[in-house]
Length: 117
Image 1 (cartoon, rainbow, N blue to C red):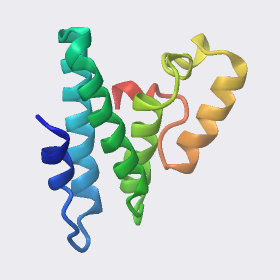
Image 2 (cartoon, rainbow, N blue to C red):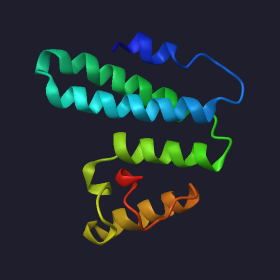
Image 3 (spheres, helix red, strand yellow):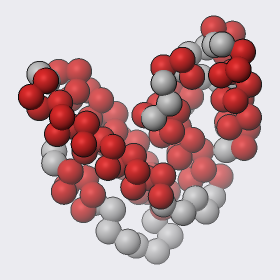
Image 4 (cartoon, rainbow, N blue to C red):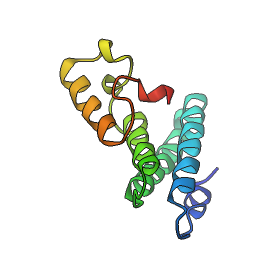
């Protein structure tokens, strides 16, 4: 997979934000798996592709609750440090409070780990 393929799949289409965000979440998971399997030489290209896809996904207009939820999941799972992930009771209090509010604003259950959603 190349950055061009990932970015090309996001051709502007009216009312397709939810589909594009779903595709982005799937591609980001695949890129994470590829990062775990590759050596350092290939990892730079994968990281660049991952970053470009995250930036593109977060720049899309979030018109529905599901769009906002997808963008929050992308933010938490692919941008924020690991200290923001995990079971709520295992988090630092400050991170837990911020994550709960962010999840609540996105219409997600603030007490559920977003990595499992």
